Length: 239
Picture 1 (cartoon, rainbow, N blue to C red):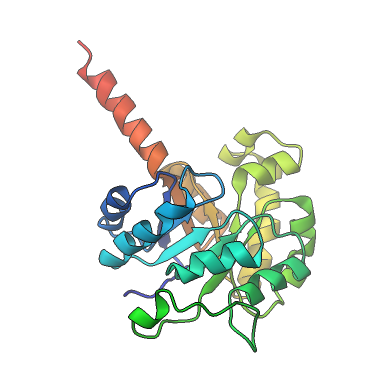
Picture 2 (cartoon, one colour; picture 1 turned 30 degrees about the vertical axis):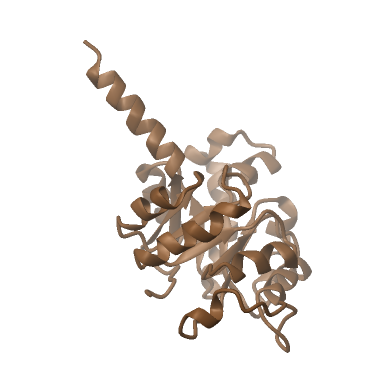
């Protein structure tokens, strides 16, 4: 299995739709990782295992965005075989620390050991804990969050970041104040040598955010890609 990497030029897929077939299809493309979204997608808990198995079959490293920053959510994702988790709405160093320790067995953490998939496979790397920065509290706490041992990356939620700062969602497409806000997140992460990424809606988005300094991008989701492709196909087939 390829190692999960969130470094320069990494491009991740985003899975909003349940099903091992669609996960295998996306995995076959060659993305650097794929994220299964349990927070905002329509993926249910029972779909996660076969989707992770499909990604593993295509040698695609996997992340699961859990529903919330709780040991139960994080443990279930890792027990099913995810290479790491994305934890939403992390607003303080204490919350970042709680996410990290939920990823690890004692004595480093508090994760409960359940011999589900781990004993069936060779030893794996330690899980990656990516925390999301989406609110004013998170931006203010970022310097302390970056000091937490075990934070493996920061993911910016571009829409929630805008809304929580009183900006329209459209600000992420190009706005001086929004770009300054992004730099206030990106620059400390790069100074701390912590990977920093963002969800992107289009390839132009990805290039725009890379120019601002992010190290990895993810998205758009499989649902967005399918909807766009179907819409374009219909329009082009009309007489």
